[in-house]
Image 1: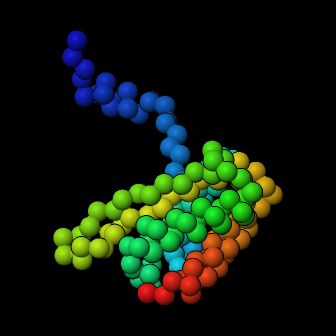
Image 2: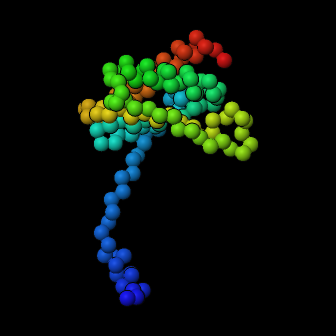
Image 3: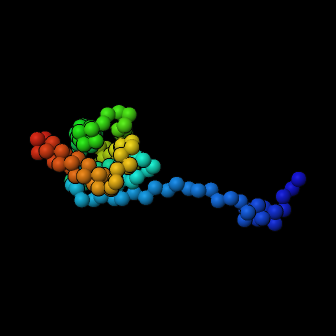
Length: 144
């Protein structure tokens, strides 16, 4: 059986709408140690962290940053895995980038259940402030 153009058009016009869950991220550019964005997804807080030009070294981004993220998240949220999850997302280097340029690499973190508090945005902002302070201390102890 062949479907006519009119039948196709009628099917598309009467098709049910499929809900799309698009997360709106709040961008945070207040810190020199990282650029971040976060959102509330259900009962969870989801963070993305990006490297800034102020701290371009791979050693900082792949070693010092995750150490500070891990320690600060555990202390701040008073939680461990699996409540807290984090992962490194490898970026794609641009054609003319330096060999140690991480491209668009980022860190991703989820704090399961922490969006249930009365003001999850305030909680997320305070966590980011603490992480920035921890990274400032590390940078002072490890210049360059």
